[in-house]
Length: 430
Image (tube, rainbow, N blue to C red; front, side):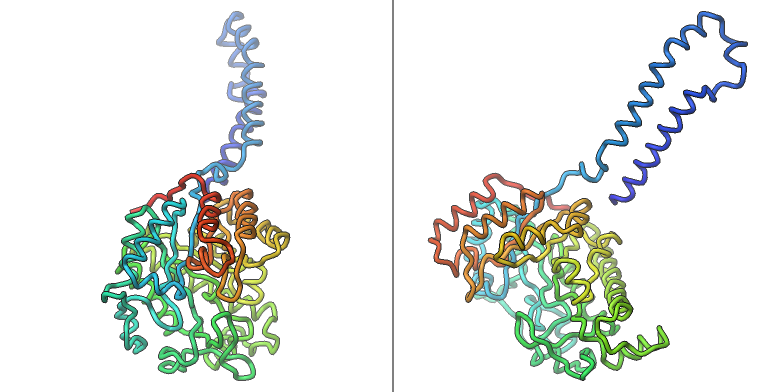
């Protein structure tokens, strides 16, 4: 969108400049015309007015040259979000606690929640797709048997909050999940044959993002959720990717060899090997975006990756290219680090600035873990640095807004209230 506006703007700028120079040459009059057809009085009038016309044209060119790109003037709806994770399940399963949570977030001038919908190889709602693949022998339901995802979406909307379900695990799953056990042919592996890696969620396997059956499964899950629920968007994070060590399974090796006439390099970070796999993931994300938009054109296609250099080199996630290809509507970059200077350096990267010029962009800020409390002072300094750069913010995660800290609850609440003293609701696009 930005490039189209800028292109038209540039063409108009060139047209004004050309018109100005044509005026100075009087090339719009046939040679000798004004002497033959105008009397001396008219010729004198034109001569007196002409310098003014030239000056107006010249000033127009200068103004156009020094105006910022149109996209920079488009209003941005500031992201003020929070993820709700499996660690928040005691809240998510209780209607009254969900009501209290959404009400509290509205009072603190938040505007978006990202409730988990895909975690550990299971979905958080009754899913025909999951049953089809034999991975949902049970359904996560609320304390009175209700649909958890439907309830949190409805209650968020009552408070004027956007609800963007979070497809947390992406291509990742526990090795003991029904998904991994039922579909071993869907898994990829390292060059030495190992199928697992260690993540923040513990030991995991990785679904092969190049396998057509895996792509169909993920697409069907996402489309099902978007179609079945009144969502405002869908979000994919740093697990909609593949660690660079993987991709040496038989299916991928055969595909790469067939397309390039060479076997995959032994070095998993070989530039061509990285680029080939990243391009395949990008091609899938394009198709996934098309599948989502064909059902709900206005739904927000959100991503929450790591900063670009890391995401591309180590996770084969070329998210900056996704933005340039206009398949991303919102970006939140995860920057979970306590050191303020390191934090500021990361959020000031040119890839984030480029994204910020074209789509709503925010920074993921850590508010604490069970074994890693984060003081309010750190949260405030990071949010201040983020907002000074015109960026939104999303907190990881809801429960740690209040818990896992030596801060008093009322002090924490007052601290968040001070961060956002005025409302900034995001408009729903039906």
